[in-house]
Length: 131
Image (cartoon, rainbow, N blue to C red; front, side):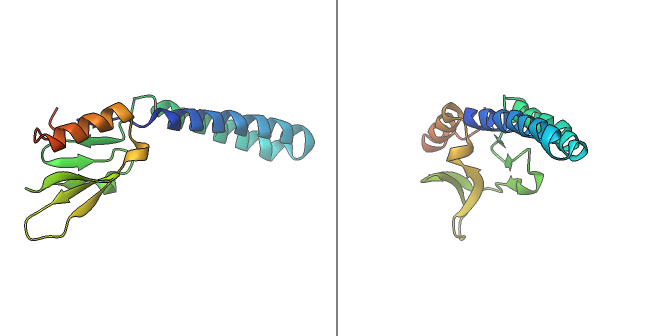
């Protein structure tokens, strides 16, 4: 099951990219054109491209019966290893027998509301996240 980013993140990133380009354009005429143009030419389009990725190209989380993967942070991948998923407030946790529940790096505020609702429903109704 793929969970997309919340729509507000793409708006924030694209707005930040446009603002960076506008500020650098003003700085190019008033302060140091070389530095402002370099920052504006790299930073602005970079933020806009990053925001564009949030449009659905890169999911926030990919969750299967055996693995949780955060594509933009591969180090945060987790093998579920026989544990079961549960919802604890705003976070997903994995519960393994004999261990303390472990919070997973998945936050409600970053998740698309519809996708988050589908994951919570699948977990709470015992269907699991495999879709």
